[in-house]
Length: 298
Image (cartoon, rainbow, N blue to C red; front, side):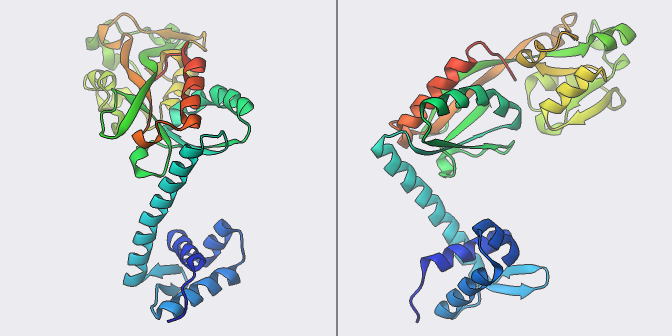
């Protein structure tokens, strides 16, 4: 058997995830021929076909599937090793990988800007997604999570800010349609609500169960979209207190208890306990608290 080359495995793993040589070459910043050479060399050394070539791209064989799954686990272990070694060094360089939901990512910018001014050798990688990526996975360092305090084993959770939301409408909408004073009047109005992925939130659920389908004129999986629609005067919808205060044309609905302000939890700065001595992670938390202590958002 020929001597195996670790670079060949890394290239093969990239092709497996990308699905084609061209996409893999773009990710690896090399040309198509170089990627193909790595694949051919690895398959020759193993005497195993890892890919089925066809016009639509590269499809994994059974052997290729095993390779890809194993390399994914190895990649996670290498990331964890990198984190551990950097934690021991305790200097302010390298990178911090953070994930949070899309609605919260703008909140982080002022804190990150000041953090980078103080520690210019640190690179921040932010992943804004509605998918929960736990720090235990090893793929990220910090997860900013909203709701009740996370209780997973081996996870450290620190409070950043309390979260509050209310229902709002624009002054223009109120002038034309008025505002509901009880749940019995809800279906006389136009509602802008999150889609079913957010119906588990009590403050959303307690209202939406009183609404008929034709009263809900707009839905989105993002609170930022709901906010824009409310500001435009399309109807009534839930907004964070922090966001709503920026727009003087918005009116908070206080006439019905179901629509009044509610504390819906908090924003939590979470990371794996193995990183509790990491100087960068501790420092970034202090910057976040300092720059968000006056805020209250959903």
